[in-house]
Image (tube, rainbow, N blue to C red; front, top):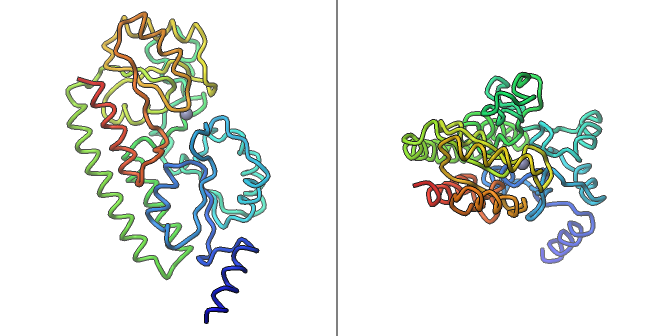
Length: 300
Ligand SMILES: [Zn+2]
């Protein structure tokens, strides 16, 4: 028996085969958290874009490409978030690999254009053609999108991949959905007195979250880089002077320097960083809870 076990361990190490069989590769941590809660003990789940890496700028290594090639199921966000992986995904998809884009699970009518944060600038060149611009890809920050579309679809897909564990997976999905629904009720009660006010963020990563609760948002910059232009900073300073701005938030993978200028110019409270990808959180509900605690500290 012992020899069989040693053989199996060696076999697994040499051939990189998990005893659990199914290999799932997930691009970003929020979906990894969900998958891990649903089936961390039932499948081999690999996170592609790790701590400290910016999904907008992530470029795959040869090892990453190999992991994707060997995956039974790939989960990405889509809508251009993983811009440097899209060609690879399309290639794998055309060869019959199952690739699920979480963004595509949300009805299109509920999505916002990437440049919709320009709403407060009627003179903006983007304000007229919202419908034709690219989509804001950060859908995972909306607990309702998660509870209604993303978690149910992941659970359904997993149940078909691992049918013998389907009842367990669906039971776990139900618990996650309930936690997200409870969070939504609590967050809604907190934000309701602030409806119509504005939040400034370094880039439009929490748009779906804030708008879910009736809060407008303005992003310092709309691009995928880590530094805004001088014009971006001027535009935000104007917003803060003209509108009721509750708070400014930064992000872990974005340079805080530009926000310091805004704070100095406007006298706003120094921004705290939001944990958009949920690093060092164990569950998807904890990702929401962690960010909500940061927001509550800044909004009074
Ligand atoms: Zn982003």
